[in-house]
Length: 156
View (cartoon, rainbow, N blue to C red):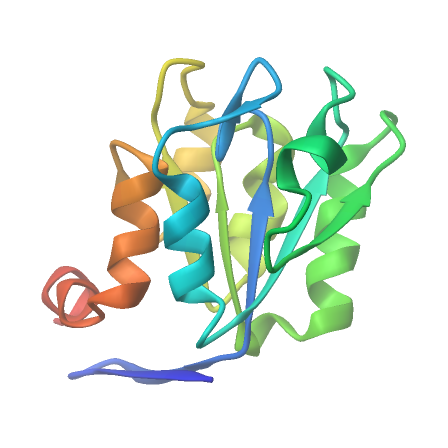
C-alpha cells in the first residue's frame, strides 16, 4: 500500500495501479524504454494491472515476466470496461494512468488519475478527467516512487 497525505485535501491509501497499454506504457505495441524497472519498483507498493484493447496484439508478450496482470478488453466500449474494472478494485484505493479517450472514465473515478502526453498524443477528455498530467509514463511512475511530488502538485 502507498499512503500519501495531501495537506488540505485527503490522504490517499492506494493499493492498485491500473495502466492503459498503447499510448501509455507502450507505443505501437512496444514497451517504452525505462518502463520495466519502474514497474518493478512500483510493484513493491502497489498491485499493477494493465487493461488494454491490445490494438497491436503484443501486450502479453511485452509484459511477460513483469510484476503485473494483463487484461485484454473487447474493442467495443472500452471506456465502460475500464471503468468497471476500476470499480471492482475499489476506486478509492486505485491510481490510474492513461492517455486515450477510452481512459477518461477510469481516470475520473480513481482516487488518483494521472494523464500522460507522449508521442501518441492525449485525448482532451482524458486530460480533463485526470487530477495530474505529466509528459511521460516514466514521470508518472516516478510520482508514485517520490510521493512528495504529488503532495506539491495536489495540495491546496
